[in-house]
Image (cartoon, rainbow, N blue to C red; front, side, top):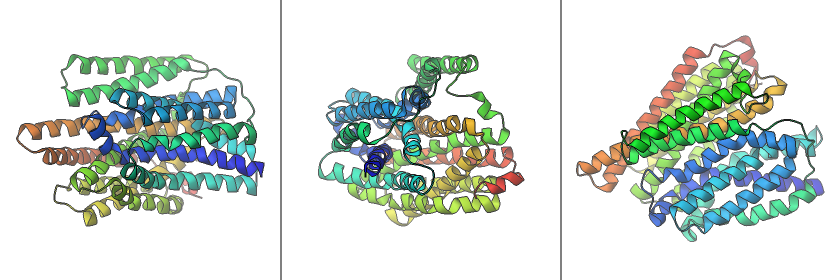
Length: 465
C-alpha cells in the first residue's frame, strides 16, 4: 500500500509538470487582456518558464545525484507550488513573469528526479514495468488534460486558477513524499554552476533580443546589446564546459555524427511547436471567437494523433530506419504549417484547422520518437543520463528560441499591417500567417538536415525494436 501511495505521489508531480506545458497556453488570450501584455511581450509568459526550466534542468539532475533525488524533488515541488500561488495572485505583468521563472526553477529541481525515484522505489520486473508504463501514460495524456482543464478553469472561474490548481497537489506531494518515497543512493560529483548560469543567461539574452527587436526595432541599442551579451555568455559557456571536470553538457555526446544531427533537429522541432500553440490558441479564441473551453477541446485531434503515433512510430523506425521517419516527420510538420498559413478571418475550424493540426501532429510525433531512438539507441550507459537531460533541455530551449524568432516575425508583420490601415484582427492574422510560414521553413530545414546529414546503418534498423 505504501509503495502504491508513493507511486501516486510521483505521478501527481509528473502530471503537474506536463499540465503546465499546455494549461497556460489556453489562458494566454485572457492573460493578455487582463494584464495588458502586448502581442509580442505575451510570449514571455511561456518563455520565462521554458528558459528557467530548460536552462537549469541538467544542473538540477546533477544536484539530485549529489544531494538526494527525493530531497531535490520535495524542494523543487515546494518552489513550484509557492510560485504557482504567486502566479495565481499576480496583478501585473512583472509579478506573473517572476512567478513563471520560479515555476521553471522548481520544475528544473524536481523533474529530473521523478523517473529515477520510480526506478529506485520499484524492483526490476513486473512492478517496475507497471510503474514506468503508468509514468508514460500520465506523460502522454497530461497534455490533453491540461488543454481541457485550462479551458474549463479559464472560462468558468478565471485564468488565475490555472495556477491555483497546482497548490493543493503540490502541498500533498511535498507532505507525502518524505513518508512514502524512498531516497535514491547519493552519487559524488561537482555542480557546474558557472556553466548553468552562463548558458541560461546567454539564451535569455538571445530571446530578449529577438522580442525587443519585434517591439522596438533591430537598431535599438538595447536590442544590439542583448545579442552581444548572448554571444559573450554563450561563448563563456563553451569555454567553461571545456574546462570543468564535470560539465553539465559533456561534449563527448557529440562525438558521433548521426547523434549530433539528431540533437540539432531535436532542438529545431520544438522551435516550430511552441509557436503553433502560442499562435493557434489565440487564433481560435480571438479570431474564430471560441471560448477557452472550446479551444481546449479543439486541440484534442493534435493530442490524440500524438498518443496514437507514439505507438506506431517505433515500428516504422524498425522497418524503415530513423532517417526515413525523420524526413517524413519534417515534411509532415512543414505541410501542416503551410496549411495553417492559409488561415484567415473567414476560415472555420473544420476542415482547415483540423486537417493541418492532424498532419502536423503526425510529423511531430514521427520526429520526436525517431530522434529520441536515434540518440538513446546509440549512447553508452554512462552517458544515458546526460543525453536524456540534454533532450529535455533541447525541447525547452529550442522552443523558447523558436517562439522568440516567430514572435519577432509576427510582431514585424503585425506592426506593418497596422501602419498600412489594417484593423487589429487583420493585422494579427497577417502576422500569424507569416509566423506559420517561417515555422514551415524551420521544419524544412529539419528535413534537409536529416536527409543530408544522417546516414542510415544496419544498426538503425534495430532502434525501433
